[in-house]
Image (cartoon, rainbow, N blue to C red; front, side, top):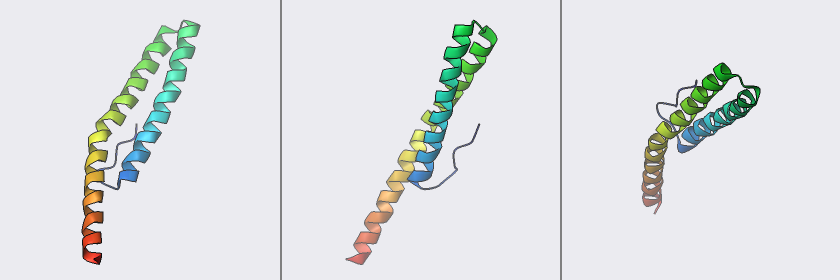
Length: 83
């Protein structure tokens, strides 16, 4: 499992969230397959991994919000200096 960037632009955090969501979607497909096959071991693992991905994406949202806030503040400061 990848780790979200410690800092970066809002796009860095959005990219991490998108990659993590794609991984969660792949595990969701595994969940459906294992359920249809009756493979409880695979089903449990796939559900756990899908959940881990969803939690990682959700935990990154406050970091994205802070990066977006900082980015907006820097853009406002740059506009003020340009005037």
